Length: 229
Image (cartoon, rainbow, N blue to C red):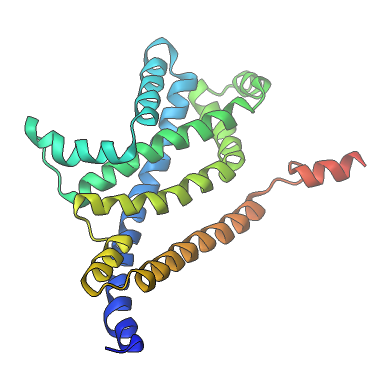
């Protein structure tokens, strides 16, 4: 079998099938990971004496547990207590938990950067605490957290390769199957790497455009420096 036939008829179709699964993993995990991160960050910062420690313990446990171990527990461990997930579902749940925990740290850091006077001013205008958080604090915090959140999204793209350990045939898993069957490791994993690089590049460009779109005049470091001059 010549190289062109191998690439066009075997490797690329297999990788395309794996890429679709990878994109599905990301599409299901990223939005819920962001929502979980927002909830945990707000709960940790404003949750009081009960919710705040719970959120802190959640972040501590997830950050201290290797993602692969978490996936193994979800897929292989929980059935022993009667909780069973499909390999895809277990992967998505693991990615959401991990992504949410790290997102919460980026968002919490951004929340801490918002001056307390804004909360006081919002409440002085008649807003409740939750209204002030939702309408004043969070919009600013999410904009400031975009660089960190984008990094975590890029990590999520790479995390998705661990789903293969639960028998989910995503991009890297498809590449490994082809490489093992045809002993074409260099070609297979080189193209897999190129595809991951493409996904990361697209994400980076999209985030840069989003930052420019949401930038508040006078709030960026470059504009602030220009104003000082």
